[in-house]
Image (cartoon, rainbow, N blue to C red; front, side, top):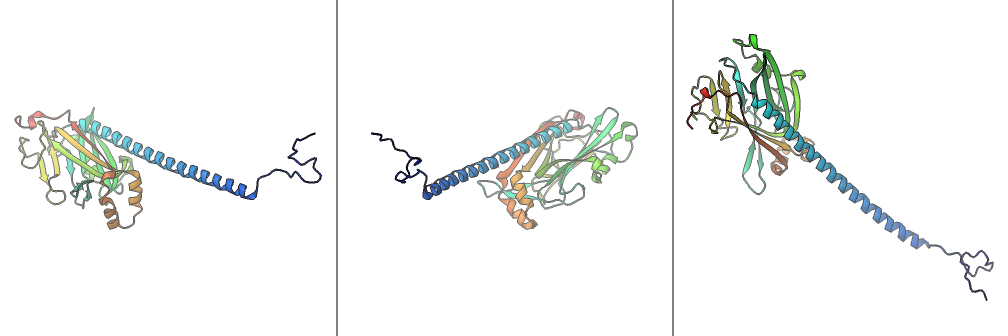
Length: 301
């Protein structure tokens, strides 16, 4: 007796053994499960992609900040006194603008971010080089200043022979820098560019500090309005240059910078940044000046 079940129904003309198949409900259940799985995979892929992009953006930001501090440190180390009374060896100033204040995480005390102008002279063989940095919302040194801007680098050179006895050409070119050939865009999203000067004993140079022997070729003005507690202006001529320069740069994270620029109202932009101090990467470095003239300073602390 043959008891084999023929599930195909090919030899079952009476139709007593129907063809095996999935029902419509089973197919719908499988499709629903596959949709849930695919949706979960897509969400996981998007989150992974966002995390990867955020990590790459932060890595690029950190790399850019380190590269800039290394570049500026090499420039600052080469500051050289010109021994000319009508030439600025070193200049930095807090411009007349409204600085941004940000609330620090875990504290109600605000931090004032400062965007300073910086200019100094270096010597390379038979040329004097004037190098400057400033933060603006456009490439024009006299242009607008907002709470967040772009850092630019300026450089010009003057032959050493006609340099002596001339007017302050390099500094004047820096103040009127509008030619893209003399400007290089360094970093975006700058919220702080702070410069401090120190004497050979490591003491900060302030108005009345007494570290420099003669005040005839130096101007130091404390800031009382824009940034209380900071030095608002440094101007050194003749044989005077700072012994140490401390630089602090704050760079806003790319994602927060993108959201900031998407806000059209300046007041709303400022309110948005108040509570984002934790999204600012800060780079700080103190640079020793190789060509400082010890005779310009008092020896005792």
